Amino acid sequence: MKLKEFIEIVKLSKESGDLGIDNILYGKNLEKYKDILLNTDEFKECDSLEILEYPIVKSKNGEALTVPTTKLSDVMKFKGKCYLLTLDLTPEMYDPNQLHKPVKNGAAISPVMYDPVTFEPKKHIVLSWSPEMAQDMSGTNNEETLRNDIHKLLDEVLDNPDEYRIKGFRGVFVRGLFEVIERGDVTEVKEYDIDLKN
Image (cartoon, rainbow, N blue to C red):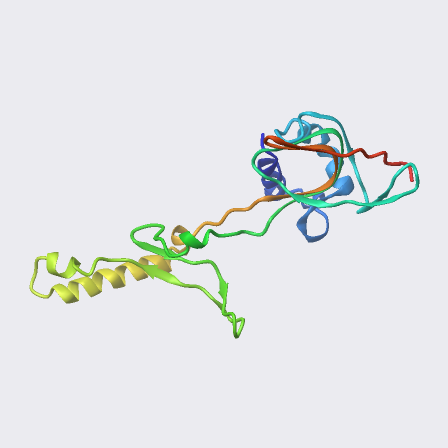
């Protein structure tokens, strides 16, 4: 199982008590999922997984360490000793090249976008048709038929907005300290000697 799938399942479950501030899997709430986490593709090669309670931890030599946040990539894996604080999904993001492409029947509804001057939220409806459609139609009033077809499409989009919504994608944020982070052919190694008792 991928870590993203696990987070989505927990966030959709009715056990909202597992989610901390801002709907994030945080600290001790992760403890009961430790075995599942160790079976995810990203954590299955960890020697040990410790759950942290606070964003600042103390090393055994007394040094304070701030727990950083990492955006998970498709090829990232954690190894060695792992100290995990939080798991969360990124906000929904959109490919700018897909924002004006039709989703269904030549139409689409954009996500909310903000006017850069007034910060007013707006959505856009994209309707696509060929200007040559009118001449290809048989009948007496081709222009009126084309207008009616476009109106029907607009009504369909407004009646079923979820079917025409441009879909975004979400990444994963992982906050923790990891001895080994493998990113494909690049490996980052750090040594942590954390005092979990204090």
